[in-house]
Image (cartoon, rainbow, N blue to C red; front, side):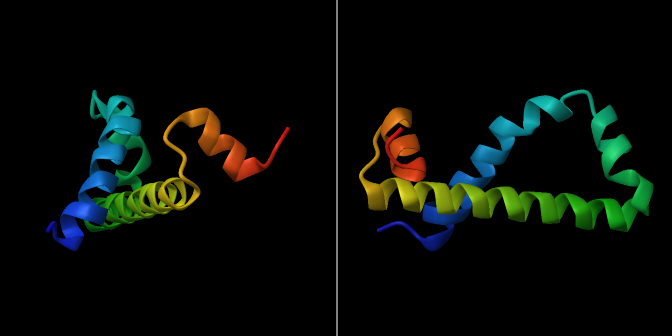
Length: 83
């Protein structure tokens, strides 16, 4: 049986790495968005961004499981309703 970390947090972290990671590849974006708050403020802002994206991913996965959506089209139809 997997732990709550493996079931909920780890997929969120992987999602964040895929969605946001490419945008921060150079490191310049980190300096532009997070470091104006100072080093500790920047770390706090990065942790907040990670927590929000992880929560969004968890909610998305749970909704997908609850609606039985195994592909994007079914997921969007369940989320938005029939066209």
